[in-house]
Length: 188
Image (cartoon, helix red, strand yellow):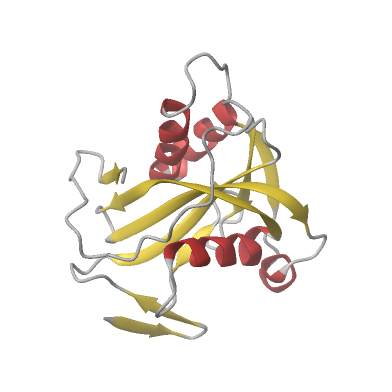
């Protein structure tokens, strides 16, 4: 199923969830600083860069495209962190990947077109900032910290088990669990 917006086509899976992709963008392989961007709807609030998948687009390709458009960064795509489901106001399923930034553009699409900002945050600070306005985005970082090597503190090991991911293409598989908060995640 698809819905059309002025500059975008919204795609939905077989259960009516909007298909989305995002990346936790880390400054380097230490993975102790994450990049957040200002919200297009609420410019004083920070969010994890991500957005809707285009028709026929794989989740990993959509994640890389979205961070390039929204945050103006390129990098090395790592593992799929999880698939997060949001049920409260809108039904979304978001594939969240780990990305290590290798290039930062001075000017990028959303900075020029809508004045979007970006900022590096320590992990614990990012969780606090996201919790107040985007709790499901804070969940991405909580999941990240929960999957870190327990001997590392506060961030993960240099590679954090990252490797090139195989695209996930079966979007109708029963992978999701409902939760009280309205957001869920499932590991493959």
